[in-house]
Every structure is written in structure tokens, then in C-alpha cells.
Length: 175
Image 1 (cartoon, one colour):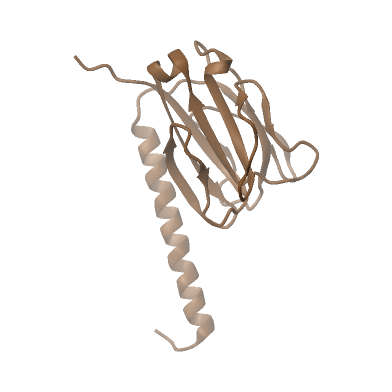
Image 2: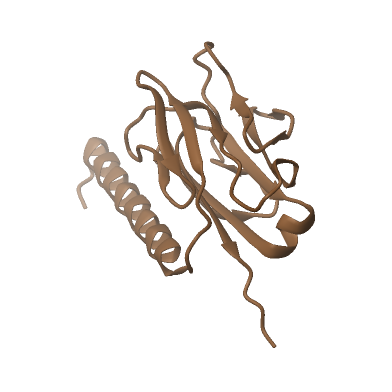
């Protein structure tokens, strides 16, 4: 390897990029291997674009775009009471929004403030019937994956959130 500091930095950046892309590929493979996920519409407000539509199971937002998400709403999934499917967002260090039920907007509206992470939880009958896992990518290239059960999904750097994926699936019953 060259002793040139610029070359060393470029090589380190390329290794990091390759590592991040490999993590994204593993997340996609893992999400493709699960059974049929429960579907519901998601509307997210993205920096410089406005509202975009997606569904549970899809990546919402554009990975590697550098555009952050400012807020989102998840429509009530079929067969789940809105009060049993809750989510909140991370707005900054030690700053989380209140929990909101399915169908409610969560984030900043008209303030151009990026989300720094997401957190979801199921309660009651929904928690007994479904598993909820989620992953996210961030504008600095960070990837946070396989969060579940009320865990915060955020980059260690608190970089702005650029895309997320939420999967709800039936729990498997074994006898």
C-alpha cells in the first residue's frame, strides 16, 4: 500500500463502501427468505422530493441517495388494531418522539428536520400473533439492521435516516 495519505484514505473509503453494500445485500437476502409479510401502506416525506409511497416489506426511501426522511405514516395493517401497532422516531441524541398508533404521522412536518432513527413495537393480540423486524440505512452510509421489539434502529453517528424496511410476519406455531 502506498504511503500517500490520500491514497490510504481512498482505499479505506472503498473498503467501507464495499462493506456497507455487502450488509445491504445480506439484509435483502434475509428479508426475501421470510414468509409472506403482512402488507400495509407507508407514506414518507423525503427531503427535496416530498411524499413517497411504499408498503410494509419494501424499502421506503432511496438507499445511498443522501436524501433524508423527515417523517412517515403507516396505514393500519389489516387485522391489527391501530393502538397495538406503535412507532416513534429519533430526532436527536436523547430526543425521541412520543409513541403514535398506526395511521398517525410521526416526525417533523414543514421543518426540514431529518429523522435519526425509528422504533416500532407491537402490543396485545398483535404482539402475540406477529413478529416485527426493521432495518435502516443512513446518509453517512451506516446500516442498522434486524431491530425488533421496541429496539431503536439508528446509526451510531446519529446520521439522518434515508431509507427503512419494516417487516411484519405471522409467528410460526410449532406443535
